Image (spheres, rainbow, N blue to C red):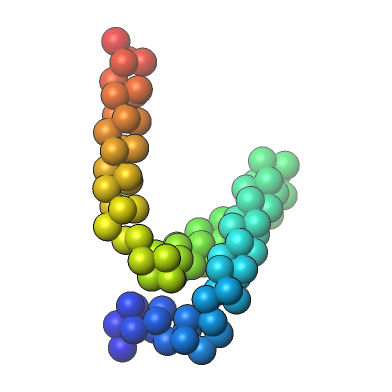
Length: 89
């Protein structure tokens, strides 16, 4: 099974609302892991990033917005590049 097939199966199995709620929970767990790191505590940032990335893929499927996300992503990277480039000069 491809990742896409697994994601769509999860959405069908648990429902869109449940998966969107889970995505929010995973984002909160990543925030908590980052906070732990900044406080010098043990953390699991890599695991939480992986969880969030998986949920982001499901959110793109649920909201049928993959192309729009890709377009905006490119725009934001270009803007970041410009800000970094301007800061260096």
